[in-house]
Length: 145
Image (cartoon, rainbow, N blue to C red; front, side, top):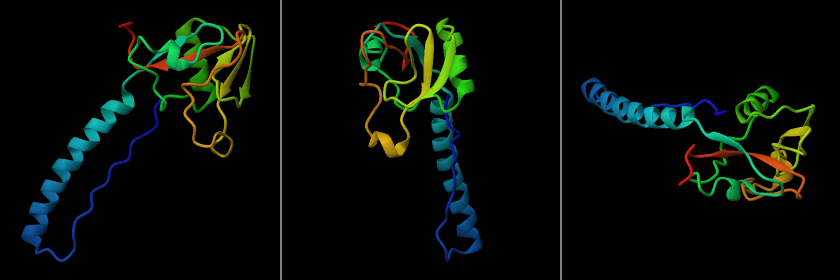
């Protein structure tokens, strides 16, 4: 459920070939270390938890090192994997579009949150639906603290 990470190297202009080679080695070393860190973060798994009715993901994930705002599904296929991981079966699935999506009413599911133009850049972890809305939440840890 993570997006690909891109890494790039840029060097100052006007260096001699010897200094350029040395600068390239240093730049590549620093960039490689940074990319490894980003890659490790991008493939690090979150734990998906189906919350109780009306609970926000901040509440659901409070004892699991918090909610990961960067882990929301970006495709129906990703969402279907989340439902498998949580042991939930949707009778039907629609795109949704609410801030509290991905969610279910117990039978039907909505997977996609609001588009960038509709959410005002607000975080989705604190959002909650009514008592009959169960959110699928990306928690940072699989163990309760």
